[in-house]
Image 1 (cartoon, rainbow, N blue to C red):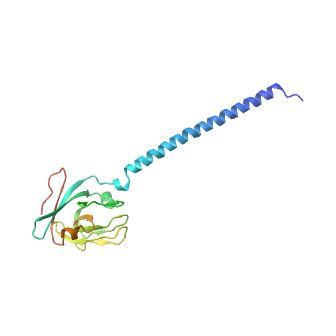
Image 2: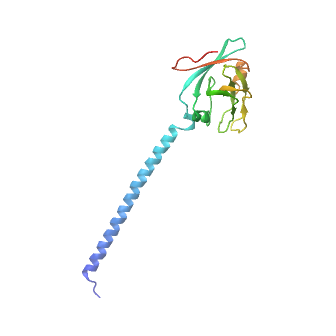
Image 3: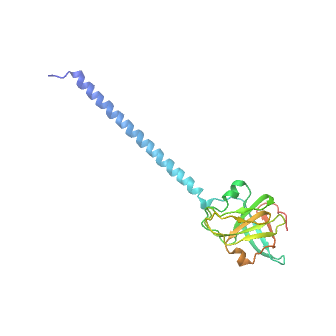
Length: 191
């Protein structure tokens, strides 16, 4: 039996349409894959630029510790944490904290404070300070990644976190005083 000519042409046309549709779909998949790959790479680049090690409150200053005779003892460069977010973030996810550096938490009021070490991978000394810039409590050698609460036990308006053992190395003790200032700003109230 002879197949009519128009049926063969219809089949060829159908095959061409199917082939064209297939190429179109493959092209779309290739384009979408390219966009996905570049989007993921861009997201990973953004994530790397805000990795936990690079998180910083981007506000700095210094804290000066005084000995029992009110003589300047040691100075620490600090990141300043004032907002709720900065204070909640604290030193979480940091892999290290170099000697001579720390974080100063500034609160608008003086009250008993409680800190913990959840998501904090380095041991710290926590120094609680009242509104008169007197050290009221030191919590030395805190345990990394612990949910144990470290209380100030007395009202505190400031907290300084420094590498574990700092207070022992420099003879920092309860009752001693500090001053602090922001870099690039007018001096803060002194002792």
